[in-house]
Image (cartoon, rainbow, N blue to C red):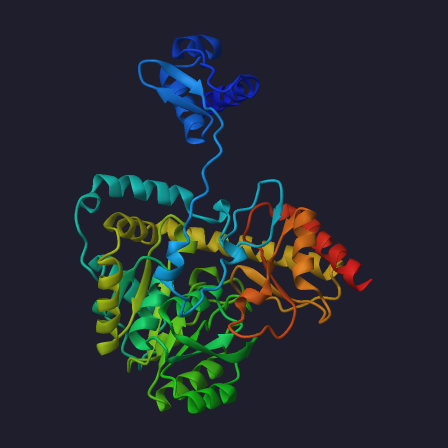
Length: 469
């Protein structure tokens, strides 16, 4: 089946349909085969595409016809107002980071790596192997495939100092992506209506997970060096919170990486208050000038619940993450995971394990580090040239720059103006669990077409100058 031929037939028939009357009969399959020199299978694929777009309708035994335009009757969903009632926890709007942008714009909004930064060959080969193996027809254990559990445990254990007991494979729970892991940890360790300390700004997905689970976020100010330990201590004392959500390595959105001293002080605070640190190591595989150093590797008393996702570094199609927890906390998180999803697809687990255990995986990560460094420096340099009023700290890893704009910036207007000029950016407001402390943009350097980064920065500078000129 030739996708190019099918697309050519679809394009040709669209022109034919545009000039035809509603209800007109399309040429027969035999006629289209002769006209386009394509196989009957390719012609049928093109007709199915047009049908899925609502342009034609098929009548078995009769033929395919141009669909008549019908004005749909308005649906009345008013009855749902009383049935649903008022939302107890209104969810944040969908982040700009998840928007799909047209191919003809400069996309600086997404936090997902471009395909050229993914191990595509390894992933495709792994899927082919998994489809032939037992994972395609078997049910995996609720906590995950034993070999994948062991891999997550070994990865964290490799960073543990000599005095700390490394995690065991049985401490690991495999979950369907970090978002699921965050929701499960918040439900199991915090609970609806109770306080959760979190860095501000912080990952928008964590804000969403907290809203979804009814957890009340208490923001703790955090900058390029991480949270202020004194502010964190006051927040623990004031709220009685028993958990703190944080990203110690290459935080999204700030790019912060905690120093060993800061990590030790936070860990000591957590221990003193009998609390948990929920550590989100989302960017473990995206170190540039430094490697990730998990706080969990220095904890053997069960105070740190560690989450590491493979979705961004392996493939967005492989939603697999590992949660490392010890003691009763692990059992509660596992019970929540079983209630939410029962288990993670064995095929996806097998694919993830296959990819990360190939010798080429380490080679791939070294290449990604070099590419991310070049992309980061290109975007940062372009911003310094074209947006001199902006302030930014170049992170040691991660996928984005956190850009502070002048205080008087009309951020919604800037975002709209940039998009009208062909540059899609993400407003920083989405990463604050409370009121934003300034005007920020989160600009990703892992997206497509890095050669257009200078043009994107130029547009941002021009739109900003219109406001402050």
